[in-house]
Amino acid sequence: MLPDPSRDTESAFCVAVAPTTRSISVIGDVTPTGRLRREYTLAVVKDNAHIRINDAITDMRLEWLGFDGDDCFNDFHIDVASEAGTWQFCFGPCAVHGLRKLSRFFRDGSEASVSLGFQQPDIRSCDFVRADDGYRLMVRFEGSGLPEQFFVRKPSVQIDDGRLTA
Image 1 (cartoon, rainbow, N blue to C red):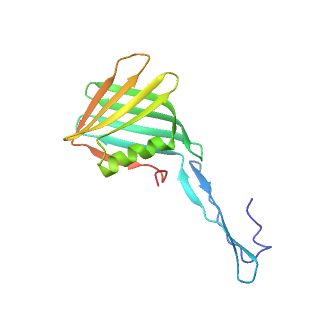
Image 2: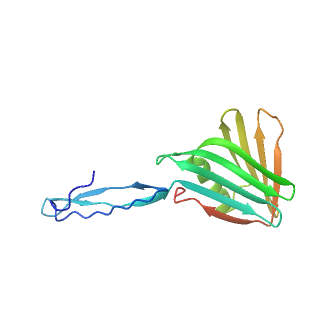
């Protein structure tokens, strides 16, 4: 609970509410006169994130939804649309670490590949491999046993990670 500013003239605070964000706050300090000075900072963190990779014929959207305010998203899925059709691969809950790994892979270019594994309800994985002129996505579901592969050549990459990769 934030303090009542009418009782402590040295306190300052800010409160903001938005339906798709969560907040993180607090800093406390003692002034030279010995009084407790309270400063509250509000960091707004979105509760979703996405990475979009596309070229002239294929559009991939990696989406994380329902951030719990701590370290996990309620849902991670990949949507792929191309001339051959559309697919959605659902992986279930995903730790923020998965978003960080993929953001780092697409931003810095030093890693040759990156993999994420899940167990919801069966074992599932997605792998991105850097190719000469783009990326290859491989999705595997243990239940079906058949991997799906998609290629994006000379892609455009947009990352909206909601400040969760810092």
